[in-house]
Length: 556
Image 1 (cartoon, rainbow, N blue to C red):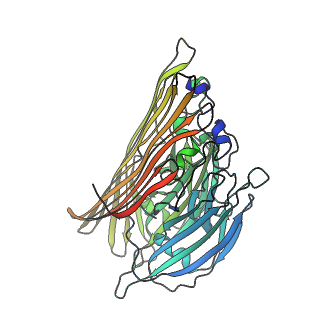
Image 2 (cartoon, rainbow, N blue to C red; image 1 turned 60 degrees about the horizontal axis):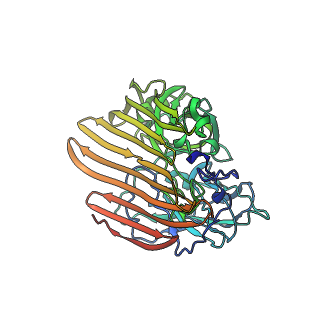
Image 3 (cartoon, rainbow, N blue to C red; image 1 turned 90 degrees about the vertical axis):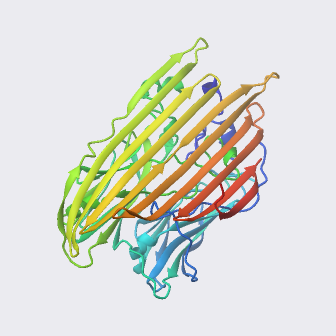
């Protein structure tokens, strides 16, 4: 009976509770020998592929250097602009390390002017090995944030005592790439607003009715607006994709509120957008040995989900205060949520007018739950639970600008499915999240259409094999991807294509009697495509050692 075993879903992040005897002491079992420094995939500030950084050498500003994280107190720094613009690209660079010793994975956030510029988690590793890793994030869209002196904050809570001895340290910089001679500066947000607008980083939302809200009085010439959203699962919600309906959660020994979560965005209480929740797995999660040495997709470096609020630009421009709110549907203690509102202005006028003409988002999702759980002759709950959610909506609005009327229409379908299968000797979760969007912008005789697709396929299998000698082995197998693609057309003619792929495949087998780690294999593939150019990086491991780390043009 799998759910009676000590090895199941292990807690991670800042938690100290662990269901797994193996995971209770990070790095227990067979010690690993790792090689090299794992670099997390580049995180884009948008959902388009990240192009190669420009050739001219950047001007670099150090945000902080050698900070040590040994408690749960925030650490502060001050950013002073010293790199003259205009810039073709602005990139955040972070370098982190943990000293040898026992330590859990921790949530890490960095903000500037209270705007989040980095979000991820740290490594939980073999106590004999002091890992280092690097992260980057393209912050070009946030360029206006870097033109003035700003307060900075690092929230990376870490417990260090006689038992948990690993000390985390970090250094962060911003690289400003100069504009090439004769080049055109990129279009960037004129103002970036933080949610929450204050110290402390992301806000915890304990239930589906909990809100992160901020009220802003925005410029009166807003032409377009976007919201970059992070919703990180914690505590009972950490493994939300494995949760069950409340009526059977107890007998299945699972968390409750079903395996469906979704972030809802509203403006002044009116639904304005939807952000699916990515099922990040931290390096203390499920089976910590599985992530040695390669962590799962985005574990060290989260990607925000960008919600297009442009159809509401006229409302945001009316000179009145407006409240932007976020909630997480089905949150069950709890999600850490933060966001950044990016506002783009009409530089030819001080005031725009207009209206939101269509909004069919509705009051919220209506997931369908199909349960088929029975207690078999051995007294074990077995069967299936299927949770699905399907949403299709249209949001449309126009603004009267200095260059004429601009009408933006967004057609979006957000679909979710989670099929949980419970057997005596195995549990399986197969989940799919897809977002299909068509954005149409009409300005005079110009008709710009952008078609995009986002996919979050995800599968976890926990299986137990009873051996003839009475021994038992458990295998954990994970497949997870982050897939995006975007096609742009102007008056029906294709003008650009981009795509990002991040895909992890891994499996680990543990002897449940001795705690020995028997076999681990994993790989992480990252590709970035822009028009006809495709680059990829592939990292592969075997028994805790990096056996291959290659990058270059994409192959079949």
